[in-house]
Length: 275
Image 1 (cartoon, rainbow, N blue to C red):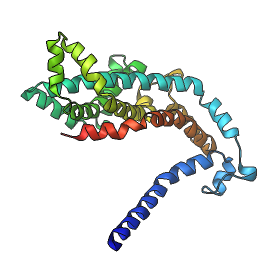
Image 2: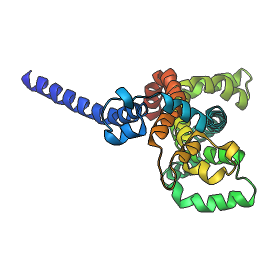
Image 3: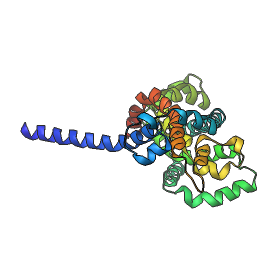
């Protein structure tokens, strides 16, 4: 009994320590977003108080980010990319699971191997190719996000679909459903937990991505929130007070989305990992 209590105490201490390490960056960002620039330089870890406390950072950052416009750009790109990833990845994973052949196994291995390829290794050739076909715009960006997000999404769907009995599809086929109807009316509704997981993972990645939009989007009116954030960091000065306030503003929508859908994450990942 004493040994078990000691182990529980150690685990608790370790959990608290890890929680502090995880929360610390968020604490620094949040507290310093309410400080003046002078207050940040004097002490980064202090709570905002007195003459160093201000709400003007948020008002100015909101204006500088052209938040409504950049928010709509980020929302459009994120929603369209995520929806297309969910549709195509779920359909591809279903066919790979149900088609028993060497080709389907090879294609699954190909998607799994694609996860190991770093974006930086294909970055320049990809942008060069997209530029030649006139695809360096928001549509091209969405197309590239679908390509980069498909591999992991297919793997998650693949594991989940294995747990769905094939007899359900056979019964639907006997009742007169074609393959399209079997997928959309029988299979896809059952994929809700893993679909939410795939959506959250991809939405968070796409919403926060900076590098790919920077390479693809050249017009200021099409800039996303991460791209707008770049203007707080000039060549000779860095507006940390505005940048931190902008970061908090930019995080709010994706945090709300995560909170609303978080109950499905563990369920989806757990079921997707079996078999």
